[in-house]
Length: 307
Image (cartoon, rainbow, N blue to C red; front, side):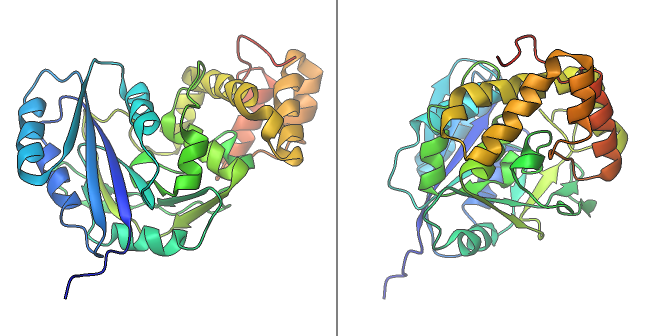
């Protein structure tokens, strides 16, 4: 008797000079459990090492769909994959080139997304691993919950853990615009504004830490250093881009909060008022306090301010 297919899944992977770990990652995708019909689509972002040859091997042996592109960076590369993702799949998943997926990932994600007709995003806790995947450390899930007010100023949904339904894909597709600095943060904003976020406290990916990570997971001091090093202004610009792209269609409560965040940045005293009355927050209370101070001193103010 033929095995019942539990769902069709499109896995989107952006690769760039990933020959060192790519085979191990691809093998983990084809070892996933649960009886899903899986399509793996990889966009090569202009690699100059042996990545192209590896992808050609997997295209021939395992049916991997390969798109050869010019080097545009991982953000634009992922958006190119998302914009090209067609309807007809039950679930869509994003994948990095150097991690390893655990066998039960799709079963966990599908179980938490099942029955949801509106936009819905699955993400899981991080399991940090060294290059050999021998030393592992699981980071705690968001202690204060995942929602739009958190998404305004922090990304707790790492792209390589994301699985989502077709309804969310339709919101994401074609939304890329100037000002977007982080594809997974952008997706978290969309999902939390228009749908739901389901967070799995059990990690389903081994997140390999090494010198070539595009973005790594760090300690408290490192996360704060991002804000001091210009990331705060990039977050402000991304929120302005989000408002310009989706403002008119946002639920009223989110419209109001986002407009306040953007408009109060014009002058010092209004910034002080909003910094300590706004609903946005980071997961750590210490980080939230530092964020509010940075906001009060204009560190989140984009070059162009909402009218």
